[in-house]
Length: 260
Image 1 (cartoon, one colour):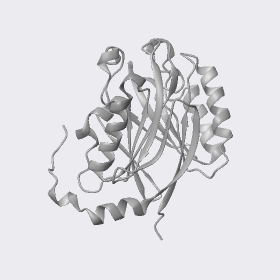
Image 2 (cartoon, rainbow, N blue to C red; image 1 turned 180 degrees about the vertical axis):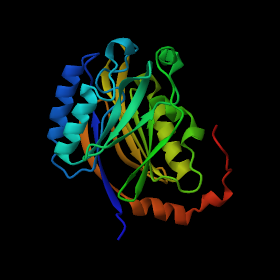
Image 3 (cartoon, helix red, strand yellow; image 1 turned 30 degrees about the horizontal axis):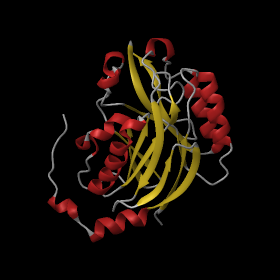
């Protein structure tokens, strides 16, 4: 029998600015306090530092302490743990989403679209490959924050994935775009879109309102939370996706293309 449910826990939280020890201690406590059954635990973009433009100071390797921390907590909770951190590799810096499995294996996605408005492109290197993870028959397309503004990077061709997941440090002043684009990505790709954002004010005095959001394939809101810290667990239903695709078989009219 195919698995028709998949449980996600979203941790919408404030972050301590460029303080790894404080962030990891705070997040470990929140993770350990999750009582509901969960299979995927989602942390924000750059969860150990906030959206820092000092990779020379805060970057780690894939053998570093934050990846080890993720490996340990994933095993402890027997759940996938994901979020992005600053990684140094081959003398380059990446805003890298880690997809950590309970058995210690991992995948990763390097942010494709770097936020030039904040100078991210001056400090980090862009990724060039999508990562679509597989969990118990579900396919999950993993992306980071600013990627949300680029629909071609997320566009389905056929039925490549079921869930489109974004981790973010998205500013409050542009939260209408965040909510609108998450809804659009769900509808146009006939998937469930999951957007996990932080709250609070960062070290650059930029406010974040959270607005973490889960949207179904017809645009229906399955979860929404603004401004408050929240840890929310939801069991997503595969039938919502398959029923929407069967009722509205838009794929046959889609434009197919190749991304260089």
